[in-house]
Image (tube, rainbow, N blue to C red; front, side):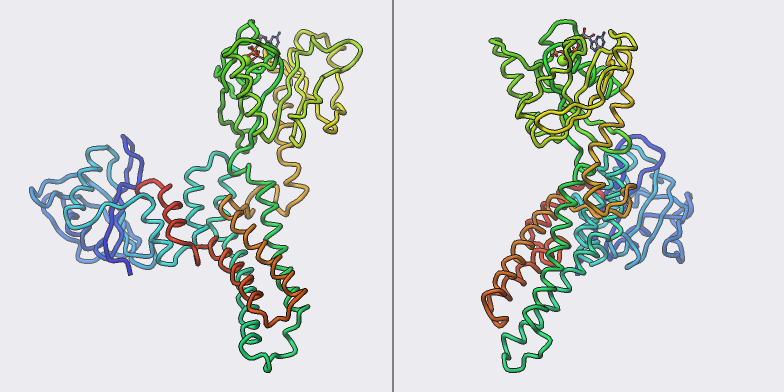
Length: 475
Ligand SMILES: Nc1nc2c(ncn2[C@@H]2O[C@H](COP(=O)(O)OP(=O)(O)OP(=O)(O)O)[C@@H](O)[C@H]2O)c(=O)[nH]1
Ligand SMILES: [Mg+2]
């Protein structure tokens, strides 16, 4: 049982229409009523209040009896609150001084300032939400796109939690049966067969593997898909970057070698987050600064999920497309060949450009554009989202709207991988040993613990600290 009552400003600091101060704990209601009055003339504690009903009134400085602000007080009695404790939210006018003054009065009544994420941590410790739902709160706040928001909301509603709990419960039931086998081998019922046990393990293993696959195909919806713009000097990489961002972010000049350092920005295309980088033009050079820029460009391309390989359309020889893109750098990457500066071509020449090209990396789509006029950029954006999501749509049961989609994060994926390797080991064990072997029970117990780490049932203090310390104060 958590005793201390905590408080914090829950809204961003600065001027705004409304700011909220939140108090949680067994003293929350008592403290709020001590400093609140329905009358601005004198302090009249409301004779009664209804949970979840706002009360209009005033916050007083209890030392001077001066009114600090006109507010709405919203008491939420346990367990029907964010933390599952008694919670009071004070809706005041949002200004740095007034909010701080109200918070100071609350803290003077023996309430402690909340640590970052402590309200959500209490919701978790009080069993109202599991760890995946607590993480979803941070994901909702930090969502950079509609797709990542929808995934976070689905996680907040417990879709990931439920699927992990189901799998874990199956293993717990299996372990219980096996433990009887270990303790009382003579009492083993006919129902516990090697085949039956393997089937349960395989079913859970399949679930773990498909969740890991979903992470691989879909984590960019949450973390952003990395796109590198790459090509020779002066082909229009920075111009394209600026077009995609719809702002003048990179410097553009007619001189080759203008971009020397890596420029990285986040963008949102059709509700999907991308992290896009403009790189230094690839060529042989002795210039030490350019050399460093080119090294950085190569690294960025290595780390990217998708490459926009940009060419000046004028440089394409009449004998056909010799795009020189047998670069090993492109292997295993999603790629689009962007033919820039089509404003220099006539209609006929534009129409004769191919829509895709065979390379040693397979068929790559071609996008003719003019970064100068914006022609073709809309189609290029469509192509980017389509190529980004094609694996996802092919491999997984994620609905194209991203809602109710269960997409594990990196922490979940790591735990799922460890669980899967314990389950694989368990299957090997069954092949060569009897079901009564303690090592089989150990493998299954490990898998149960790994799944429990995801929901928080068996997460250590270090994991909890790492998760909640990333939250802001007041959440
Ligand atoms: N006509 C035309 N000119 C363009 C187009 N895109 C870029 N340019 C011009 O090409 C020159 C180089 O453009 P940048 O965007 O700086 O090219 P870059 O590839 O980033 O060049 P570096 O950073 O030097 O490697 C500039 O003079 C641009 O105005 C285009 O679509 N059409
Ligand atoms: Mg540039």
